[in-house]
Amino acid sequence: MIPKTLLVTYCLIATSLIAETCNPELCTEKSRDKINGSQGPYPAEISAWSEVDKAGQREAGQQLLKDIQAHLAAGDTTIMVPTGDYRYVSSEGSKEKQFTLDLSQYEGVTVDFQGSTLWFETPDTGFLFRAGGNTVRNFYVDWDPLPYVQGVVTGISEETQEFSVRIDPGYEAARETLSDGISRGRAFFFEPESRNFLGDQLGCTITLDWNRRDDAGDYLVRYFGFHGIPITEGGFSVGDRVALLVRLGPGMHVTGAQPGCIVENATFYSSPGLVYVISGGTGPTMRGCSIRLRPGTNRLLSGNADGFNFSNTSSGPVMDSCVVEGTIGDDFINVHGHLARVIWQESPTELIVTKMNWRGHFTDPVEVEFFDRTSMQSYGKRRVTGKLLYNGWTVDKQKCLADLKNRWHSGDAAGLVEGNRISVHRLTLDAPIEAREDMILACEAFSGSGAIIRNCHFSGASAFGIRMQAPYCTIENNVIESTGGIGISLFGQPGFWGEGPYVHHAKVVGNVIKNTARADMRGQQRAGIVLMENSPSSDILIENNTFINPGVSGIYAREVDGLIIRNNTFSGYGNLPAWKTLPGQRASHGAGYAIDLSDSNQVEMDGNTFDDPGPYALGTIYLESDPDESTQANDQ
Image (cartoon, rainbow, N blue to C red; front, side, top):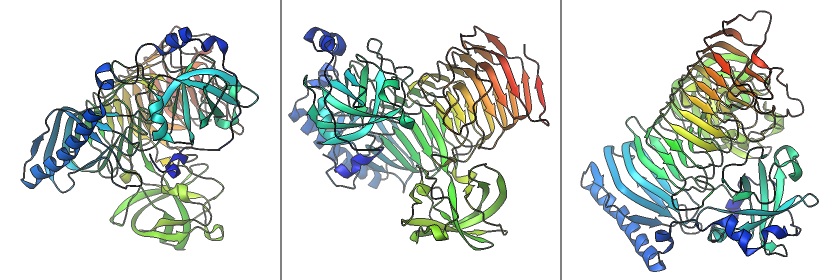
């Protein structure tokens, strides 16, 4: 059991639930068998484990930690773990992670698990790796019980904004892991026969009261569609499959990676939240790492949130030959730093800003760039040093340049709320600057610059494919398919998340981008690759890629300075209608074109080919330009 206070993650509202009648057609034993099939959450040989077996695995898990420490104390640099099943659990209220491997004081150590499986029993962080310049390899990870439940939708009520769910056999074990009362989280819907992620569904949060059921015994779930969209427009129906989850601890958290750090041949079959989280330090090499549906099961999800999340690293990761399959509950990859907000100016060369990129004091100067938050107009660059004032600032709107009405939802700037006591940096600048209202800053040096993603195969993201928010990146020779949102996004987010900084000097070469933008993500551009306004983009090469059924457009770019689109193939563009814009948003006039460009300078296009346009296709290339824009297009 975990503290109920942890369960508020991603919650919007708690509400009472009202009963909805079960669909009679789905209430027969015959139809239950058809819906649920014969498999469960674990293969038969694992389901057969007794409590005695699991107790032995827990003992083996604790002994393994002691053995690794003994090897390190003896000076061993290669540690071969006996192949087996090792089981871990965190106690309620404990700050200890389930499995902590601390190699931060060592260099050149390799821990080879030789195909062992680490089993975790509570939805806290599973594998905490304090990495240094060391290597871990050859292991599997799973949860028992699973950190989500799944079942079938048996009823939908427009009146109460609820749907009812019959939980699949074997999946109710996760109930107490999530909560013994009310769970607040997310729901994802799947086709009943293929069990693929259901196209056209709208993102939602849910509230589920485990103590209330309808007359047929099915659980009642309160639905909150993103942007206030009602359940009747949610894009799912009675009979569809559904996974219900609360996002909690990451599967693996890598901290303090240094040059030479490698995570190799690691496979996750589930995770309570983000799967691989890499924060701070340098970007490691992730080679042959995967997120998969466990064979021999009827699971719907392989991970509850992002697959690979790299945040605030001083250099970008190298990802080589990695795999995501099944469906994960967010993006395949997110490479980003965190933007900071200017709070106050103490002198022409001293600023108080929200804590930058999870850093403490930094005395080696780094370059930052200042922007207007809304327009992303640059106010110039400065070199700065920073002194951390830990919990040293009380937010007061009378002494705050940031717009407190605009909340960010990620990073330390998310705590910028009237009356909060927060950690801030006092920055010393190498030259004066005039602080302005709602000014923000970005630091490339702490934001994953130089990421490389190559030779990977990613399939089944409920949200974006690759969310790249850092410069000097290379995305090459990957297959990116079956995404709910954009296939590859090349822009930061100075609005909702406060992540970034932005993308420039990027290469997207030799990828297959297939069946992207399938779900309903209103307010986004429905395309294979998107470069967006309000995030300075320049010097982007998109070459030799194959776009197959990208949604509306293969490429959507707005306000890019220096863009080469060369020798790409666009097939099946315009197969879906454009997503609806939200109030106050600027709609694209080129939706339905294979390449949709607006207000971009120095654009070169050559050698692109187009075929098999869909029912919503309007043409091949759309240009909406400023008068001073220079565009060369040699495509037919």
